[in-house]
Length: 210
Length: 301
Image 1 (cartoon, each protein chain N blue to C red):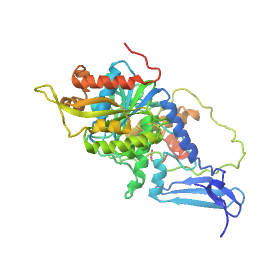
Image 2: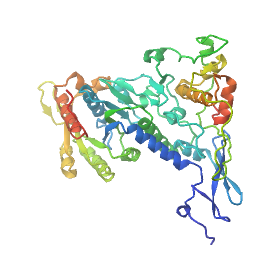
Image 3: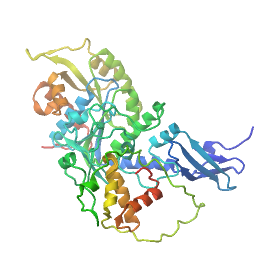
Image 4: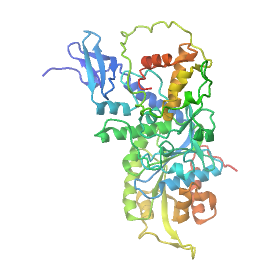
């Protein structure tokens, strides 16, 4: 699909994607010559069709995770279908998933921090809910220099509150979600994941619903 | 009428990165399958001819011979390979580089929707807007199959079997995903109804560029447990007629044996329990045929 600015005879380029959460999507395209913008609005069925292809209009904020489509779209996935790397098969069948390392507060194995909230509603599919608006730089513009914290390859720790929140994520997608947060933290030099870090990551990566 | 350029006259990208993402998916799948020496699609077009039982037994037999074997249950709506290879309720290791398959039988790596669904009676349903689901559901299933092939850490395999569900459209869907035409095991029965459906599938496979193809004539006679003689199960000999008409050779004729279904459904592929029986010998011959054309095939002691 392409959009042509007829007056300028220029292809309009992607500028921004918005997903309001009602199953629809808006994608803004702009003419690089005259600046005119237009929004492509898709209904829930059209949005779903694009999502079913495993692609995102405007590109992905985070790399595709293994079996991301199935795990985020399957209804009634088995809670213990996936186990974390290195976790014993039998243990995975009868125990809650192991908590990530924790600093401060409650000890790592505190069941209160690990127990999923029974009243938690089913989570909406991840990560199709939202994506931050972005404005593409004009063609030929070099990427902005990176500044701020230096990425670190070492272990990332989790605060007890972050552990509790992570364990409210359904087991079917938890490993995938956890990996995204860890990658986000490492890339930004963050050594401890807290609920605040999770909120920021969710907003920056467009992962509402995690 | 106003004049403006049409789609193919515009070569500039919209920068929506859709095509790039689709190409990346294809690269990822091709890269994942690059360690597989031979992909074998077990197809028919017809339902109820025993594709899954053939897949499970053949995969188990080759694995027991020391081959590295994987099996994909492409029947998303009616999966059974997980059960047949004894991996029901196994958990899949979630690794950053891919999902590790379950391992069943004598070392067959397996992926099946059965491993992912909450219960035995859970129908396959996807999140999405209600109504008109037919519009996007087949796309969603193609995505799931692509992830089974491309996101599972198959590693190095001699054979990757793909159990293709009934329907010629399902064969097309698979062929469009694979980077190259596979070997095809076309399963049929002696029945006339099966013959005509399978003939369509063979034509479709040929036109898609599949060159290496063999027929499996399943339920070729009934083995009488009393006199141990083979009796016909169907009128006519549709499988041999099919072979003559299409030029596709019969690689195996497998007799109907109730214990084949009972043991395979119980997660114990029959060929392992009775390798020297009539069924076991038929599968041994089939395994030899499949192995005969594998590139770089070497005898495993």
